[in-house]
Length: 336
Image (cartoon, rainbow, N blue to C red; front, side, top):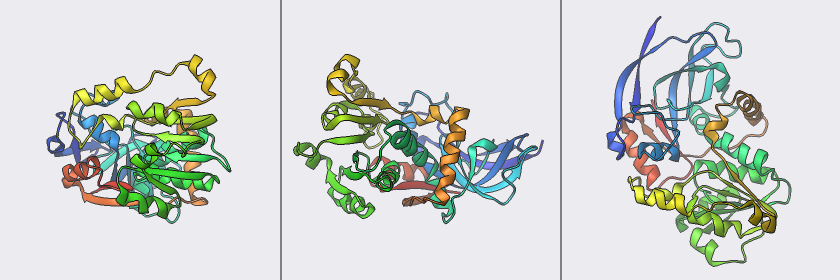
């Protein structure tokens, strides 16, 4: 079979971003039912930093190529592919392997770039859109008049979550750790608060839905801000990582401090607690199809994917540093 020379970034050693390997590799032509993409952009997610530090239990054994999403141009299709053809602008959700200049995937995982979106904006959509759609519309079932708190309001997920909640007719409060980022949240149409301001003001409560990304000790006090029948969806354990440094004690502390939820206790709270691992959802054929249908609706109900900063692929260490030190707003991308 024809081989394609391309470049990829591997995690071969846990620790600092500088340990990631940028190297040439070979990839075979697409098989039946597969699509090959000449990647233009790869999305960076906070999960990539956690797996680089060795704190991501679903990651493959080292060495492996991280990355959950790409955008680019279809460069070849395998037999039986009917929905896509060479030259199409596409985005794709990947189960690892996204930090690469050429990628081959099953057709079911590849989608047309939404109308009006650039390739860069397309790369910022798959993980964030799928995560937000599941959390807000499948788990929390938000609706007109709901009061919503988005904890991770200035990141890629938070940026889309705020827009999706507002489109549903909800009232939205967004949190940030940095006062200078409040203007970003307000520009999206939400009320902005720093985390310190939020925790200092107990009157900011009665939320129907809270989107939590920090895990650890912040889950319990946020649950206390829910009104009866309120729901909280937890996305991860970001409080276990600081400045991209490998600190096992900090991560273990976050895990230990994340509450073990008692069903008996929830009878008194009349609240719902969800935990979302989007990676597992995207490995399920039923949900791939369901989310693909929802993604196609972006042609008619667009979301604005804010690109915080784009780095050349060989500057991946700088890109990770930018994200892990909380400098970013919106999505951070690698460009090939």
